[in-house]
Image 1 (cartoon, rainbow, N blue to C red):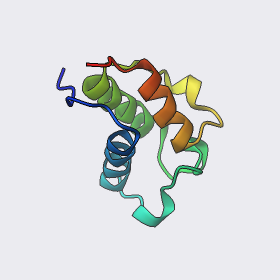
Image 2: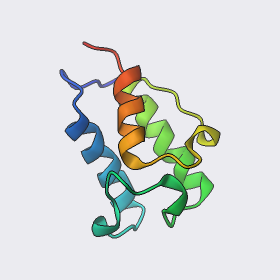
Image 3: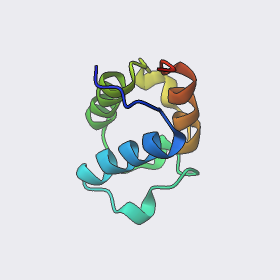
Image 4: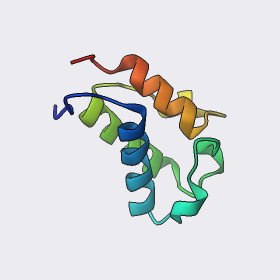
Amino acid sequence: MSHPTEVTAEAVHDLLRTELVDLGLPEETISAETTIDTLEIDSLDVADLMVTVKREYGVDIRRTELAGVTIGELVDRILAGAPSH
C-alpha cells in the first residue's frame, strides 16, 4: 500500500475530492457537509471510491456503511482507521 508519511484530514479530503471530480462531479458540489447519498454517482462508482480508500489508506469501508454519511464523516472514519505511520 502506498501510505503517505502522515495521513491528514486535508490529504484524505483532497483524495476524495480528486476521485469524485474524476467521476465527473463539479468540484463546487463536494464539501465536508455533502452526503455520499446526494452525490450524482452510482453504486459502482462508490465501490470504486472505497477501493481507492482501501488501497491508499488501508481502511476497508463497505458501501452499505455510507448511508447518510457526509464527506467530512467519511474523512474522520478513514483517519480513525488509517495506520498512524
